[in-house]
Image 1 (tube, rainbow, N blue to C red):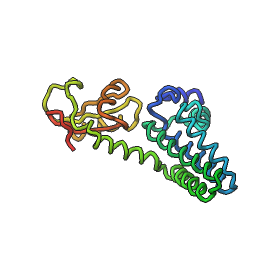
Image 2: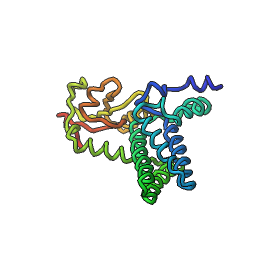
Image 3: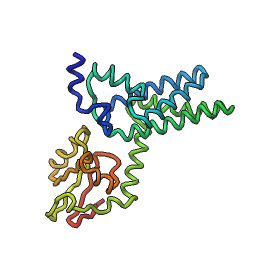
Image 4: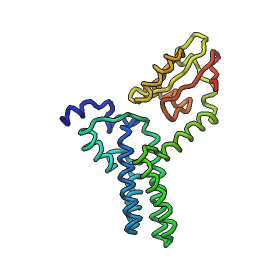
Length: 233
């Protein structure tokens, strides 16, 4: 049974690093919540340092060094199957925030400021608990906001070179930046086409040059482009 479920994976957790099973970050949040709440209740603040180091190591060296990831992808996913795939950059950014807060909390305790340490650790505990119970990842939302701001203010999406996309006609269209393993990406194009929109999909796993050129930090990303190549808000 385990092998048959495992074989249905659309994304290899150790190789397809641009996407991640959405259940994996939530499981990780559960581990973070349990660890930080235990630290707050018992007063054993070194747990903040251990969890902060684990998050930092997983961000720097990858999932193979992430203990919650090993447990999830090795034991839980093969048993229950793969969940919805999402862009992995948002939860990775959330891990960065968690690592910074928890490391700072441990440092505060070590320097004799337990109140500050409890506040910083408590913030992580509260946000991790929120993520587990509601599915709302605050760090992920912060990343998405930053991504949108970069897309608007960075000047990279003011105009798209239609020739690079192999488009000759002069009608308005929607350029959709996507990834073949992104579940949400697969839903956006049919929805836009049902609305009567002309859609040109750009696979960022193949056209990394275009993703870099236009500052695409999160997929799916759809922009309306006029006949002159200018992005319309």
